Amino acid sequence: MTKQRICIVGDGLSGLMTAVVLAKVPGIEVNLIAKKGTKNTDKRTTAISDANYKFVNQNITNLGQKLFWPSQKIELFYETAKEKINFLNLNEANSNLMYVFENDKVKNVLLKEISKNKIKLIRKELKNLDESKNYDLFILCIGGQSKIYDNITNARSIKKDYKEIAITGYIRHNYKNLNTSQFFLKEGPLAILPFSKNHFSFVWSVKKYFFENNSKKIINLVRKKIVEILKNKQDITITNVQSYPISLRLRKKYYKDNVLILGEGLHSIHPVAGQGFNLVLRDIKKLKEIIKYYVGLGISIKNSYALNDFYNSRKPENTIMGLGVDATHSFFKQNKYLDPFKEIIVKNIKNNETLKKFSKIISNRGLSL
Ligand SMILES: Cc1cc2nc3c(=O)[nH]c(=O)nc-3n(C[C@H](O)[C@H](O)[C@H](O)COP(=O)(O)OP(=O)(O)OC[C@H]3O[C@@H](n4cnc5c(N)ncnc54)[C@H](O)[C@@H]3O)c2cc1C
Image 1 (spheres, protein in one colour):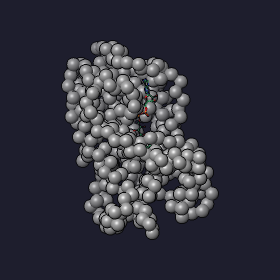
Image 2 (cartoon, rainbow, N blue to C red):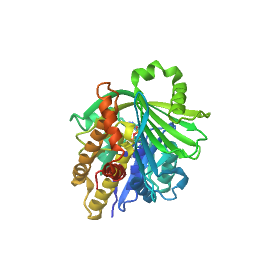
Image 3 (tube, rainbow, N blue to C red):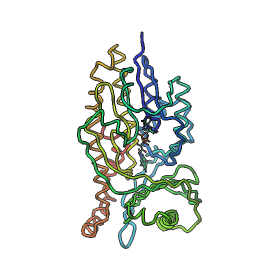
Image 4 (cartoon, protein in one colour):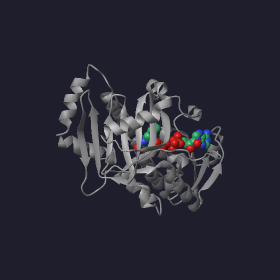
C-alpha cells in the first residue's frame, strides 16, 4: 500500500515534536523542512504538565529521565506595597505537577529521533506553499510571525500586543529546597523554574519601556530582584539571558485545503502561566489520533474531513485557555485603584480547596476533563 505523505515545516519544538509523533503512525511517511544552519540558540526552559510529560515519554524512545526535572510543588506570590503574599500552594504528595526541560537539549534529542526514524530532513527555507501540492498534508510550524500564513487565512485573529518583553535566563545557586514559584511583582510576573539541583531558569515579563530603559543593567536588576524575593543574599551566577517580545494571537482559521498551521502560529499566548507548548502538545496528540483514524480506514487525508475534525476538537480549548491566560495576566497587572481589592481576593484564594483542585486539573489536562 502506498504511504500517505506528510510534510512538516519548522524545527522549533512544535515542528520537531510533530514530526516524531506522526512518524509513529503506520501508513505515513514524514518529511521535515527546516532552515539551513539554524544554530540551536533557544536558551529557555519549558514547563510541561504531568499528562503532557507522559505523552512525550510515550513518543520518544530512550528519553533521558535527567532531561526533565520534576516538580511536586508550585507556589504563587502576590506583591503588595508591604509584603509578598503567598496566596496559593499547589502540591502533590505522590505524583509530579510538572516537569521542566532545557529547550536546546530536548531539541537535540528530537533531532536524533528524527534521523533514527528515517524522517527525511530537507534543509531549506520555505518561501511559498507551492510544495504543498506534493503532499497529502502540509503542516506549518514556522513560529508566530511568518507572512506565509497570509496565504492560508485572512480571517482576523484575536490579537493583542502586550508591549512587554519576557527576560529569560539560567541561574546557578546553592539554595536549599527551592520550589517552582511565580511572583506577581509590580514590574510584572517573575517565574522561577528549577531544572536541576543547582540551577533554575527565570522568566520575568516586564513592560517594554522598563526593559529598554534598563537594558544595560538588566542582569544586575534580575540579580537584585531574585535575591530580594528569595530572601537570601547568597551569590548566584546568571547566564544565557535572552529577551522575547510578548503578544497574544489566537487564530480563527486553522487550515486551507491540505495546509495546516500548528504551534506558535496557531496560538501565541502570554508566558505567565507556561501554557503555550502545553497547548501545542495537546494539539499534536489530537492530530495523531485523527490521522491514525483516517489512515486506518484507508481514507486519503487530503480528501477527508481530518483537518475540520482537528479544528472542531481543538479550537474551543485553545481559545478558552488563551483568553484565560490573558485574563490572569490582566488581573495581576498593577492598578492603584483595584490593587486593594485584589489583595482581599488573593488572601481568600489560599483557603479555597476547590479552586486549588480545579487549577491542578486544568493545568495538567487542559479542558479535556
Ligand atoms: C519566554 C517564554 C517562555 C515560555 N515558557 C513556556 C513554558 O514554560 N511552558 C509552555 O508550555 N510554553 C512556554 N512557552 C511557549 C513555547 O516556547 C512555544 O510554544 C514553543 O517553543 C513552540 O514554538 P514553535 O516551535 O511553535 O515556534 P518557534 O520556536 O518560533 O519555531 C519556529 C521554527 O520555524 C522555523 N522557520 C520559520 N520560518 C521558516 C521557513 N520559512 N522555512 C523553514 N523554517 C522556518 C524557525 O527557524 C524555527 O525553528 C514560552 C514562550 C516564551 C516566549
